Image: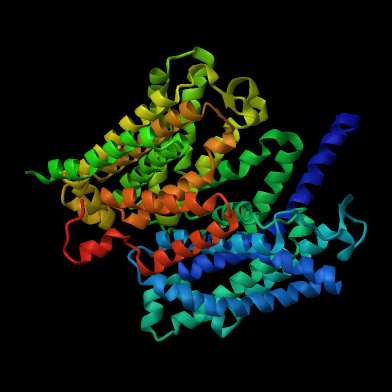
Length: 303
Length: 306
């Protein structure tokens, strides 16, 4: 059977989709990582996540246009920039929000408002047209992995994503501040009562979350093709799908979610392309109903 | 005079009377129609979010389902508009029934799953593979039943029924039970409230309101794309309007629509980015400084707001 051309074609296509899905999946993990960290630590839903990613993408675009900066350099720069900008934003919004009756629900609306503000400012400053960074800014040509050929830009983006994931792991499990962060994630009130400065820990996590969103944005022109001020909404939905599949509030579960999402997306693209856009939503609902806490989650469901 | 009757006289009658009289003196009928639709949707969000605390982030799914329920009946079965409207409401309630398992989720999980459900329905309806049935991405055209004045009157009737429902919830044991569930579901269950049943009734009523409004929207505009009937703005606007005025009241969502949708129509059309900016700031300010809405300013002073 396998010797027939058709079967070879199918096996090859499936193999391509699997490896490609793995590469894309790593990038999707990076997209979801920051959102999940913020939800995990603060229990607030950053609906403006995709818009921060968009800002990171535009920062990289202008850095390349005017300074010919390599996206790798831009990534380091925007991470630092967004992490710093996150501090005043955190102290302006979050402590006040957390005093409300139902912060989780209200955060959805608050950050929707922020998302509108960012989108409006971006549209006013950058216009509505589509932008892109040429692939040669990052790397030229294809690269062979396991006998399949992929653009080098994909591989580098996936590599950066892997570095970011490892970085988050080290932060959470190998540093003192990460230890405190995990304490806040497990039980906020108890963390307060043991004397942890919850707002400082949260502000750092918020900064890292926004920084990661911006880094994901730097590679968006290569992975998501074009960037526009209005791209944030779709990115936010995709991020939610990824982190809900993994587990809401568990940053490392995001990797599993990202890879599962990436692989199934690539397979659907290849064999059922007209329905591929339906996939994220159905997967999201199915996973939520079967395991509301995500594939790697503990039982955290209430009432 | 019982409070229920007082609320009907103080809110329902004037609102409907003004909206019924306006078309004679104001020529932009589409705008008036949109006001009616948003008042209905804001009250629909009020029923589910204000009274039970579940934020329906995919509320537009019911609206779009209603619009398509109406359109399919008219296009394929040549049903008369009012019969098609009944199907629109029923279709939205069916979707609501289908989504009841989402109530196993809480907080943000529910909202996100609801959003995903709405987007999934949109993807199905607008799929090119279903073009012979739904028109796919090319939308629907219902010029055969086009009758804007009749549609406007019907929308007003739906709004009147919706207001009556919210007034009932505001003044009845059932409405109180819903609010008790919102505050603490376990204590409410201990007090003898059938939590699951009450939530599902509120959810289906909320779906019905959006479905009927969606059906009458399809009837009024008669030519639209799937993306129009399912656009996220319907959800967002309805939620923000309801919150701005104050949820779990009758008057709050009405005030929200009149003020915010009024502002939108004065500056939103000519300079959309600047409107978006102001709107975003307004939403953030609202959540941070007035999370219980405009009417809470009055309630804090001990004034009973309908």
